[in-house]
Length: 139
Image 1 (cartoon, rainbow, N blue to C red):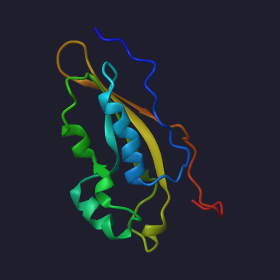
Image 2 (image 1 turned 120 degrees about the vertical axis):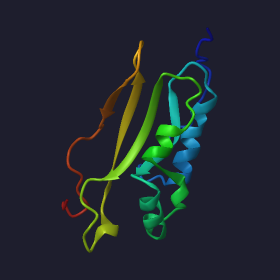
Image 3 (image 1 turned 60 degrees about the horizontal axis):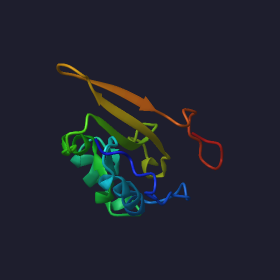
């Protein structure tokens, strides 16, 4: 079994407002490291492709820099039993006049295959489970 090379240097992100393309480059650093969980290389932001198309004209970046839930699920995982994904979703209903001003919340998920048989465990981690507010203190 290979051991993790502690000499590998990963460049951390320092700006919490980092956009999708730069975030994707950050996540792609992990793909070449052996013996670690599979880390999906895009933020997962859309329920499905229709949502991705609908948001396309309203994002400050290429909508392809974020992914759908199903793209994360079906992506080949290189035989790894633990998968990690970074999700970004709205915390409110988008059916409203100011939907394009909604704040997006970031959270992580780990999908862990069971040792025997079928099934997976899903662990959701939210580093800031408080309700997100804008600069005026509004939801």
